[in-house]
Length: 141
Image (cartoon, rainbow, N blue to C red; front, side, top):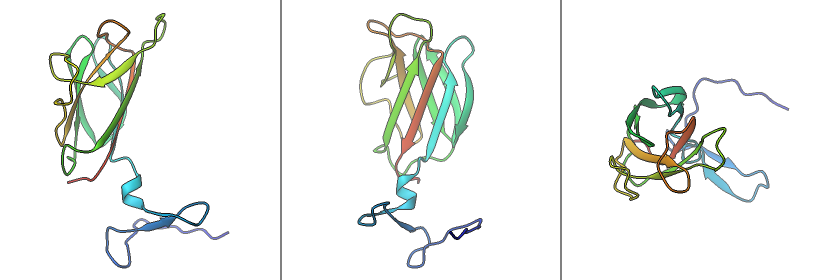
């Protein structure tokens, strides 16, 4: 087995295009399209605090169970893929995260090229959660 050690990968045809072949050898994908462009893991209770992150400048507490995550480097548009999960350890119910606006309304207007407003909660109300994680995929600006 060979080992490649490098600090930079540059595509031969286009500098930002590096193609990798699937494990089965029959499909290819662009490397830059397959990696997360930003992610964050934070504590949503008490004083909101980021535990770890990549390409995230801040998390803002907007009220009970309502937060805004802000990327350091914006996406090319607001049409990127976003997913989040949350948990409130020690409760009798599971938790979920949905995209929303600053008032906690469930909608899809809480996203810009650099911010996602999200809400967390249980079955019947928004709740601050102990563990919240979000991942962002798409094209950087």
